Length: 211
Ligand SMILES: Nc1ncnc2c1ncn2[C@@H]1O[C@H](COP(=O)(O)OP(=O)(O)OP(=O)(O)O)[C@@H](O)[C@H]1O
Picture (tube, rainbow, N blue to C red):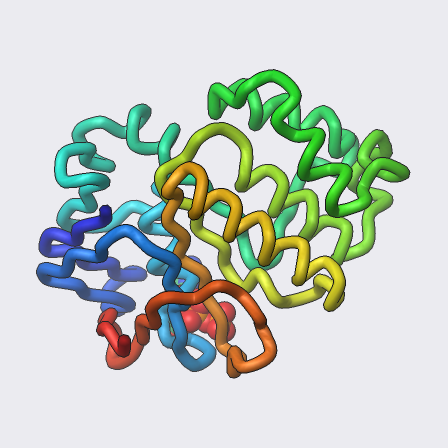
């Protein structure tokens, strides 16, 4: 599903992350690692937000460097602490993402309704609480038909009921579309109740399989 080829990310001269050659198969993965280990750096690189040396391939043949547009249509990302233009409404942002990701008409309704966002999704995001913003960023990450969805710290700021909803979204997408997930967390995950198949660890500026 995802392959790293001589991947290296430096901030100035500081080497933040290096993955020489690693293939990750289809599935749902938790990326663990302590604060500052490089989880966000890794996810932002896979999402195509950060520049890096080397290459990342999706499904063996779609290169983030050589086919940047095709790659980005198939990889969605929700940031740990999302920031959006305050004057735009949730609905406007969803419409923008739905168009960019070629989402089927009305796809967002299921997500807005199950996450119970109907009462505020028409309001400017500047009026949202951190949990409301987080839910909006999760809806945006599910727009279109991505092969891979990256969720950076999905557990922070959302309440227990919302976490259960997110759990069902992940299971639905994985079971019906075969969408893979990379989820990051610096917390212990015993209470997350998400359908996790594998764990990865970011440690010593690299990425390793745990299980
Ligand atoms: N823009 C930047 N410029 C310079 N160094 C950075 C930058 N962003 C991150 N770093 C450094 O890269 C390393 C990895 O940071 P990163 O944010 O990826 O870690 P993380 O595992 O996501 O941390 P956390 O769990 O605290 O969110 C840290 O040493 C951090 O100081």
